[in-house]
Length: 307
Image 1: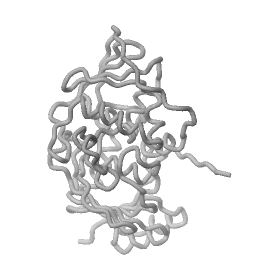
Image 2: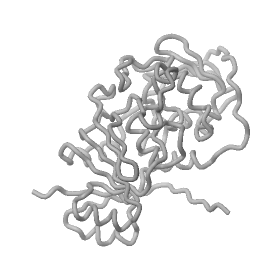
Image 3: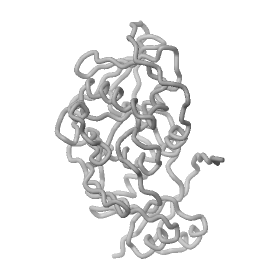
Image 4: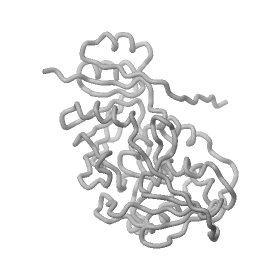
């Protein structure tokens, strides 16, 4: 039986939101880390599965063991905070996690690595990590990894926009940490969904590990191989902490195909299973193709012109 191939006409709204954040580079200097204060009022937050995630999982689960995705551009790096490319954000979300993630249906930030959070004051927030979250190198994630990642990534200019809402971060205990905003800032939780705030092992940070060519995170996929100019491969992480959002496909390969029609032909001939950035002119013929399913949904977009 011939495998049905799928393509995506529009990028997921959450990923487009990340693009907007990356393009809005600030010109003001970064605030320095300062001491955190104590407060009183407390709240908690929980999350529910996204309908869009369930749909995505069903589509991916239809592919037997491996998935080949065609995309237009090749990222210059797959280290969190070391690039401003959309295709790089795709890869970061495969290999890493943040404190929050963006819900595809509501575009609201929802907890990812944390079990709960509470506001100690208008400017100080306390977060509690899931226990037992493992990095790809087998180490368990702790609050020290989170805080170390904040200090490490915010030193890079490409990640500055993701840290403008935070002034300091401090470890409370093994699984608890605080973030201090200095002044009330409604953008904090949205910033914490950004790839510039993804968490890496403190042991590798201190050892000077090259995350740009070998990313190590806690995400559902482990980086396998990068053939520059051709493809990038990932393998499912067997010890991923979130069973409901664990990978449905063992191997995922991203093919870099710059020319739009070539991506379409690769889909039609079965070279790839999924296409990102489909040329609008090719959509009608794909809709009429018996072995191709076209998924369309409303999304947000951001275009700009540099002069």
